[in-house]
Image (cartoon, rainbow, N blue to C red; front, side):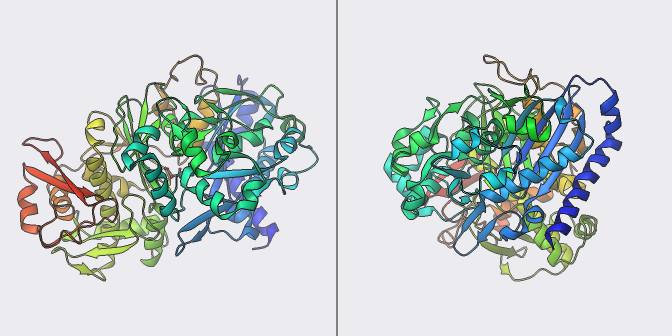
Length: 613
Ligand code: XUL
């Protein structure tokens, strides 16, 4: 596609989103005439695109924009914004591609009917864990941005590492082990930073870059996360990293709220200094840089709130409260629970909440989310999700016992790669009796696995009283929501918007959401504002079917299969077959689970009457 065609596409895309919202909420003309007290803007620098949501002070969405990197900046040759070397497990994104796309998004906003001078505050979020390496002298450039040039033109030579590692990277297992050894054990690291070492987390990425790219490192004056990088562009100087996103690095001491300098320095000499300042989530960073006032017509007293991780912003965007739990269906899928208690499950993450200062997010990440769903959909020759849904409906709930686990790129939870199809006896098969079985095997497998890992992490009891939210692009598919509702046996709350992260970011720019001492943001009513409601309810008769399938899939290893029982973290897969009979019995009232981590099994049992099993 030529650049001009690409630009046209983006313009059409952006315009159509604006006009769509004009019809659905408040028209652009309406905005001009309705004496609105001000507008608030939220950005989401996500994996495949930058999104922006503009709201008014009644929390109504005025406009949404969406610029995909691949379309705006095809010359970088990414797939969905990422250079993915599946074999080497490396995943990076060009920093300048992000900046060029941001330039384009701002141009689009300026050429729409929106008066950017009315924007009173800007908040933002980004994909978590990625890191950006600024070259010596880069902050000077930020301080002296020239309104006659694009950001990309001015920042062309501002990065010491041109390709930033992103959260999809799985290539740093060695560095993860080194970091865990350095602090004594995975458990020690988790107690200190909220997570054991994960490949996608920033610490192991920095350590590898410091080993492999010494020249780039010598030229580095500052390291940002993607969120603080984006905020830096807007305030025209290095922005601090907010606590919530910092908890996704393995570098932040969650007990003392400081960079853990021992780990930082183990990853690379001078890293503590290069990471710079931290701030509490929702802190007001200061005014927008003059560049945006002169070039785009923003008001000079437009304020920027600290940017955060996308998970953190989206939980604000759907109004989640303590005890609630969410499944976010995006490029990756994530599950997260808001809790007042940190639960240190070895495969899970404890992040600091951006909402309440004494709150935590208990999170599990699943790398193979919508990309795999899209891939299988296209393999099954379904042009649309409606076609896929039709296929799904041709197979019964429980899929006659057929199940599949599809990990096209190395999975995070558990650490595994490959596609695994099972027949009702648990035998590995290469294909299913029908396309409908394949569609259902994929979707049921994805959510049964999530439930298993949430249980294993001990997060389930945390949300048993809360609401189950499903967000992200995939949440628009009612049939997928029904599978989730049936598997979890809970009503599902969702809404029509795919953009809870950028909406949440816009909320964070509102004065009463920003941090003032240790206030909590007023989340009451947010769910309703965003149209979040119960969209599907569980089919109670499906409970039994899924109990059986679940127990079959994730039953205890036996003497015969324990060598190949892959459910633990190091290598994990459900093993079927050997236990089929026992599983059906198990699915009644009593049960005992045994699962291993690093080859050390431990027991977990549920008694009679336990709600889920
Ligand atoms: C969360 C994670 C992903 C990215 C994607 O830990 O790795 O959800 O934040 O945006």
